[in-house]
Image 1 (cartoon, one colour):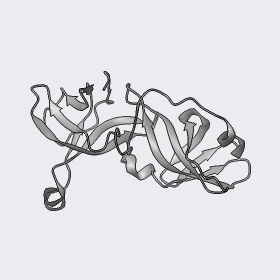
Image 2 (image 1 turned 180 degrees about the vertical axis):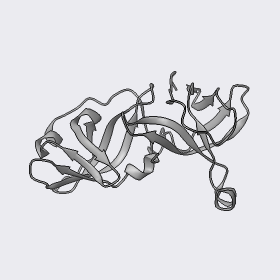
Image 3 (image 1 turned 120 degrees about the horizontal axis):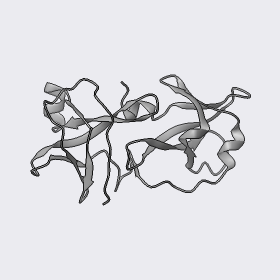
Length: 175
C-alpha cells in the first residue's frame, strides 16, 4: 500500500484534454480516516495559490498521477472539510506523537499508509528518530481504532508493530 507522501507531487491532468493542470501538494484527512480532499499547486498562472480539491472530483488516481474531468474544476471554490492535513507545519498528522492507551510513547508519525479504494488511512509509519530510522527502518502500525486526543494519536489496537492489512484507521476526537 502506498504512503501518503507518495501522492505529494503527483501530476493532476484534465481527462478532457490531457493537460497538466496542477500537482498534489498535500492530503486532507477527515476524522473518519478518509482522504476527503487534496491540496493542489496549479501548474500555470501568475498567482499559483494552493487550491483545495475534494477527492470526489478526482476520477482516477494512481502512483502515475491523478485525473479530473476538466481544468474548470480548479476554479470552483470549496469549503475546507473538517480534518487534518498530512504535512501542514503546525497541525499536520506527520510529526504528531503516537501513544498507546496508557499514554506510553510509541513514536512519531512519519507518514500514513493509505488504501486505494476509497483512499483512506490504513495505518501509520512510525519514526523513532533519524538514526534509528536509517538503521532499523520505520515500523508500520495498524490505525484501526485510532483516536486523536490532546494533539496525540492514541492507538488501541497494537498486537505487534508490523501488521498485515486488517482495517482502516479512524481519527475520532478533536484537538
